Structure formats: C-alpha cells, structure tokens
Image (tube, rainbow, N blue to C red; front, top):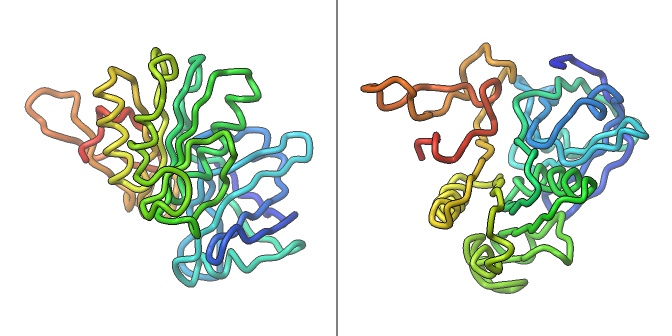
Length: 253
C-alpha cells in the first residue's frame, strides 16, 4: 500500500511545548497500517519527513502521528491546523510481529508514538501487555497512561532512572514467555535489547534513520545488520524497506 494520499487534518493538539499530535483523514492508511509502520509526510521543505503511526481509527478513517519540532520541516508540519492538508505516502515499512500472547513494550522519546499504536492493537485483542516509558524529565512526558511504568532520568516523575530500571520492576510472571518490542533512541534500544537477552526473551526494535524517499530507492537510511553469509561481518539493509523493525540480535549497534 505504498500510495500517496492527500490527507486533511482532522484535529491537532500540542502535547507539550515542542510536540504535536496530528490526526489525518485517510481511510486507506487507517485501514491498512499495522503497528511499527510509518508514513512519509510532505512539507514545503525539500524532503518528506517520516513519522511512526501513533494510532488508527478504522471506523472514522483517520490516523495519528506525533511530530516533535526539531527543524523547519517539522515546525511547519506541527503548525498545521484542522482543515489543512498535505500529501502522505504510506503506510511504509514492515511492522512488528504481534502473533504472541504476552508482550513487554518499551518506549522513549518519539518512540512512544508507535508504542501507543502497539498498545492500542494488542490490548484490543485481549493480549497481556506491560508498557515501560522513559523520558528525560517530566516536561517531556507524553502519551502516558496510568497503567504504564514511568521513568525519568531526572526523577521528577515516576521512577528515577531509565527504561531498564523500569523493566527491572516487572515481576517474574510479567517477564516469563513475554516478547519485548522497543522503539526509542538508539542507546535506549541497545540497553533494552541487552536486558531482554539477559532474560532469554525475544526482542524486536524499530530503527530510526534519516530518510528521503521512504520506499528503498535512495539508500539514505541504510543500517548495519549482521550478515547471514559466513565471513562477512555485516550487510547494509534499508531501514525503510527492510525495516524499520528488526530482530535486536541482528542489529550491529
């Protein structure tokens, strides 16, 4: 479903001083997107910007993305209001494998948006889900639910520490036979992957790379993945086309 759609903004809310949650109307994307996929959103700047799908509503034909302002392109997109519109390519990439029955979700930074979509989908199917969120401080807390384990580096909200400190509060029953799905900054995902490995748990991560085309042509978003062929230390995979979701054991951190 790699199609370009002109999408109208249905609603927009600011989650904090620099992050917007924007809801677009596009029945095709809402119907076909799965957790872990992303969309490439056009602005008047040169390149489109990739955003993980944060939520979908198939009944209303809408989907949401979270936009953190870090430059002119994201500032322009975050300033859109109800009734505005832009071109959106998607859904793109490969989503998470969610065929299991028990999951631990770990999210940090803008990774909490795709984690929200994961939680939305898994909980609607009645699966067992534990969510751990990590933020720098309370000013950065977004997409939080009281049922989540919340951590902050500053210790001014939730548990003082990082995502792994939150994961360490899980019970043996929470951990047993669970699958770990993680989205966030690279150091956080590396640490979560190591934690999962120490518990003997399968872990998948969603890699965030700079992208241009979003469909595997430009090769801007290549990442290093362990090679299957003996004697070759690694191979380059396209984050947009071969990922963004990878088995954490395959990633060369």
